Length: 184
Image (cartoon, rainbow, N blue to C red; front, side):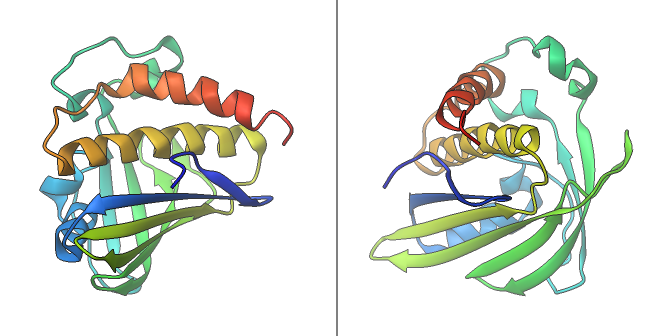
């Protein structure tokens, strides 16, 4: 399985990971604020179609390794909150939601969509993350590096490793995707 996201359409990128199960454990890391906050963003979520969620991203808190926030992300150094709407929820196999939604600190943004699909594979779980409705190349590139980094930190948590630092990992993946997707 390739760790890199695959562009599956003009506005869509897809990631696959094989993670240590069981499926209920991975579902908890997607849906429970405390666990989700270890790799992505904390906050409440109504687990039903039409449910509301509030994700509080604090990238500096995802690892005990402290490092400076890159200059271009300084405005997000204190964290960012997204208001999200759950589109589909079929525990513990499917969760789809709006993304980018309303950024409280910066005003409304156009929604994209993220879908998480879980499938048991023996004692492992196949996680597929599909992010669609990415309207331009810059957004697709930012999302690619971001998901790659967040999924790496999720894997660290699930495998009992100290989570890697977010910002230096993110910068590395951003450069990598810039090269990989230069023809988009």
